[in-house]
Image (cartoon, rainbow, N blue to C red):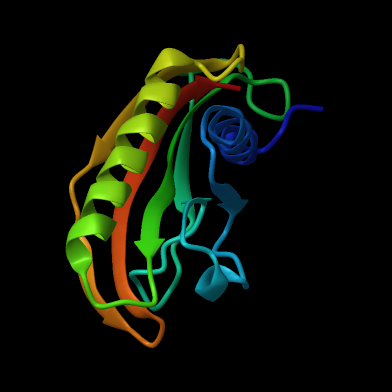
Amino acid sequence: MSAPTAWLRVVYAVHDCLTQALDTAVTIGPPLTQAYLPDGVIVAGDTTSEEGLAGEFEQSYRTIGGPRGAAAERDDDGMVVCEVWAQSGGDDLTPLLDRAFALMEDALDALRDDVGLGLADVLNLDLSAGQVYAGPSEHGAFVRLPFTVRYSAVI
């Protein structure tokens, strides 16, 4: 039986790729111990929204008039929300911005180097980044850099 979406396999593949490539904590969803980790990457989690969006997917049947049901091929397009963070007990944002952007660069390089993430049905990966959140928190200065991994698959 085929999976209802490639989304969860993409989440696991992104997590595995980043865990192997980065020398920092990589979690699926926001870690409960985030307050004690100086930096890291969240896969399938968004701490910048109240809802905590982890991702989304959309499907359509691949052929018009073809077979429908469990055996029919579907286009499965989705995205996984990820986030780089860096924090300290201090109040200086400059080193945190430097650390977060260096970690973001390493994470995006690792994902670009592993096109398809070893998933045969993933046809395309697209990475986007662009939001920066920086400021104080209850644990000192904090920087968050959300990014998304978009995928196209045939399942």
